[in-house]
Length: 246
Image (tube, rainbow, N blue to C red):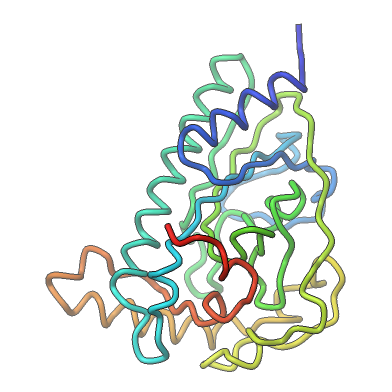
């Protein structure tokens, strides 16, 4: 017999015991117009499970304009690997129950030129009540701020979804004013911008991210952690800065 409440409690508990700091369920009816890529079709599923793994505060605080730091790049890689491990575990649990499931990897591009993944982890997390979309275009959790990496599992398993949070950025524009590449544009959207272009020029950001990825890649002892990272808009966000360092 199906028990959406019990199954939701179990799968979110599994996510947390596996390493997620935050996890929630999104009702995909809230995201019926969300664009997807690489063959992912939301109509095949009913819910999305969003998981968030925090980045170490100390590594984020050491980010500078000239160098995000190898500790931050390492944390980025490690968090993505942990997320993929968690989401695969959740997917396996769902499959054992006899339901369809699909993992959307933590950080995998299907369109390099447009910097697009299979679907927006931030949109799923926002719909699940894991956080809200900030002025920097990132998911902002009430406790961890934007200092998280996200992963998603899609499923047709009956679950109890969470409720989206209200945007709590107010009039703050620290991320917009601090962006070194000028990629962020201030917008007064309430819950979600009408498009990515409303708040973000992806090519400006991508140029800076790829610059640092190449910088790490050129150092043999750091090449394994080469990643397209910058982190300034994450560092300056006041939400999450006061939590205890990991």
